Image (cartoon, helix red, strand yellow):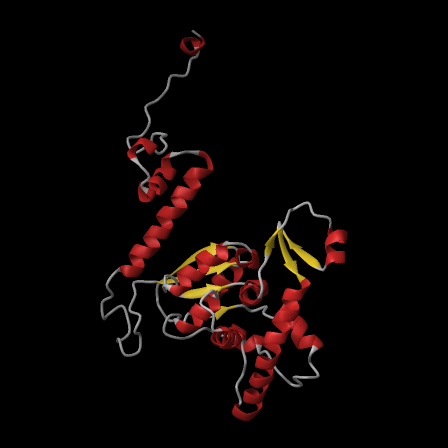
Amino acid sequence: SLWRMMETKSLPMPDNTLQVRGYDFNNGVDHRALLQSYTSMGFQATNVGLAIEQINCMIEKRLEPVSDSDQEAPSTCPCRKGCTIYLGYTSNMISCGVRESIRYLAEHSMVDVLVTTAGGIEEDFIKCLAPVYMGDFALPGKDLFEKGHNRIGNLLMPNDNYILFEEWVLPIFKQMLVEQETEGVRWTPSKIIHRLGKEINDPESVYYWAYKNNIPVFCPALTDGAFGDVLHEKSAQIPGFVVDIVEGKRKPTGTKLDHPKCVCLIICSQHRCVSLQIFRG
């Protein structure tokens, strides 16, 4: 045969080489076993399986007991976890249904720090005020503009949603300006997000749970979106209101941020996740 005529013989595979094999549904639907089988499934499923393994390693490390020599006293570091998990994501993850998964992680304190972009903040609050709808990637922009609809991939955000957001956030900004002038509060993006998470008071919100569970949220470019539009267009109503971007970029400190061991789960927003570690030294 052709294969016998070829000069190169097959060398034996290393002993630890996985054999290609998918999940056998005759064994019933075992979700844990199904996900574990991805590693040996091949193609992109293997990459998903390897990612799952990495995340499981993060979780196991986080659950490890911490010795006194490795960590601060419980009085100054109540979390006492084996590591700190950062989750970084871009705005489209909040635009789509992945938002509910991120909210679940924040609700159950399964991550310690959130890092995202401006849209990843404002669209969470907007969804608490009005729904986003399914559309199509191919919908013509001119027609959508005439209808007052905005396309985010194959999702549709009505203009009215942004109006509701402005009506909700502007009174809060006015109160924050009062606190800036009377109490000397320096409003960094993280402080603003923390405050808005309190004000939204909606368990559907990612940042409501970040507020409740004291999960720091970093968004250096908070004004690059609807927040910035409100601050610019309504500046006469909140004269002198300052969003201190520089203060928000200084070396991060705090119970969770001071942990010597950190891991990052990144769905984009990688630059800020990495720079936070550099600032930590």
